[in-house]
Length: 230
Image (cartoon, rainbow, N blue to C red):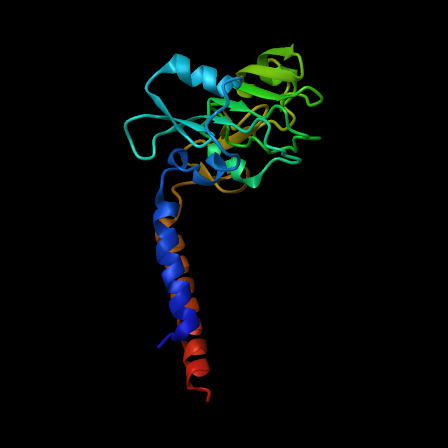
């Protein structure tokens, strides 16, 4: 018997499992509700979605119509009193258009747009630079109190020298504005892609399974002792 604490944890895990299994592009419920109302009429997100067609509003998000939930195309976080980049932004990696204007943001930390490989239009407050610098975008313009970063470049195809070149036996892959990741060529894997051969899935699965079973038995035994204690 797991006891009350174990039962609560089990129920919580079952409730969270469907959310964890959702495709990354289909998530975004939390980030869409960070600000009240639909995308603002003055936002680049609203203009983009109106011109694209086949879209619908989901809070401050613009999604493709026809699936539930549809792919997140745009996110309007303008005039949301944001003093820092919210962690929920990581839910919007599929966005093509993103508006962060009219917020008291002072910085865009490195990695804030990690995984945003689809992003083509980003509006930020004028005091801020485009993430990755001007070299990460085809065009950077200024419009009154905002800066528009347009046309994300592929840093792997750029003439600008990469800060960290990929090691031998790997290929460069874009991972957001000015960001890259190095993917090992087959059949190489491991640290700096130095190991050759197929990944030992059976060994890895056996170790992971053994560790999981051992931890489960340990937790089960602990809960039993707590239940038997008067």
